[in-house]
Amino acid sequence: MNLFRCTCNESPTLFFENTHCAACDRLVGFDPGSLKMKPFKPDPILEGIWRDEAGAPFSKCVNWQQHNVCNWMVALPNSFEGSMDLSPPFCLACRCNLVIPDLSNNLNQILWGRMEVAKRRCLYTLSALNLPFLDCPHLPADLATLRFKFMNDKTPDSHFRRPIAGVPPVITGHLNGTVTINLAEADDVARTHTQSEMDENYRTLLGHFRHETGHYYWSVFDRLDPGFASRCRDTFGDERLDYTAALERYYATGPVENWQETFVSPYASAHPSEDWAECWSHYLHMLDTLETHSSFSALLRGFESADSLTTEDIHSHRVSFDALMTRWMDMTVYLNGLNQSMGMPDPYPFVLTVSVQAKIRCIHEEIDRAIDLLL
Image (cartoon, rainbow, N blue to C red; front, top):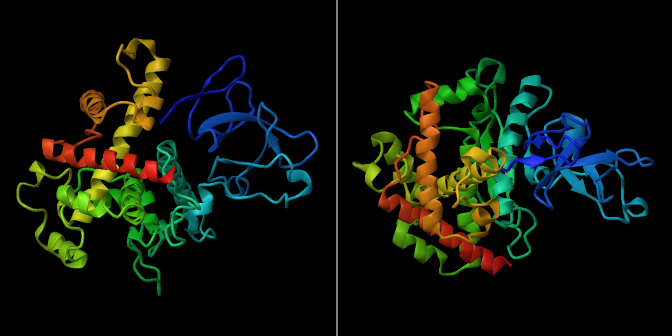
């Protein structure tokens, strides 16, 4: 994730979740139009209206104002004063929400807030890649907007051990443009318990969002490009194989033998669709972490190198996939080494074989093709 700066005299660093500058105490929020954290001042006359330094009008997202679970701003037209309702609007990220948890339970709001942080980080990377997720005119209505359902089937005050009477099980997954995520994934105890039960070496909220959006963009790319699926079958296998039977087999017998040679994770071996989604997730991991490194390198001059990649390089595909992968392999060694120095587990416990790298290269190339069709 990129680092940002306030424009006040002290020019302190702003992080993606900040809502105020620690130096000048101005409101700061994320402007999705510019992909930047910016400072704002209240309009001297109109209540609830904020102005950026160019004088453009903005409103805080309604979920920021009412629930304090967002920090994105909504750009308003300059002619808004006489032509629109001044009630607070939803930002681009919150407009994707189809279902949110029952907020009469205070714990639900805390866990939903964690969900929103991970969701916005995922959507930031998709925006930086120019991948549409809201009201895309090039797509049919069922896929034009990526939708989210945040639901729970057990009580949060029990770390999701006690079922809620009459509530059917909530399965995290993607279906027809809608991503459902069980609220239990935002509870550290419940998520760690599931990770241990399933013998996983990596399970995070952000990872869930990235994985499930991979399923969504498979559907998007398939609608946009008649040749997409056949190209990907050469790399990932035939996604038309019986999905339910494949998952039942995976959970009954585990991953395929020697999965490490050709798959990025055990779960990727379950079905070609999961292989694509796991590789998609790792591609977004790679871009976001490289962007963080680039941004911190500019802040901490001692880490700079002559061949460092800029955030623009990373998202615009101005550099080759080979250059990205080389930097990523070096970065994962560095990341894991830092954690090992602190006596903590590796944050990236994966091995990217030549076969796995070829799959991630396919993701990179298909994103390029899709963007060309969308622009």
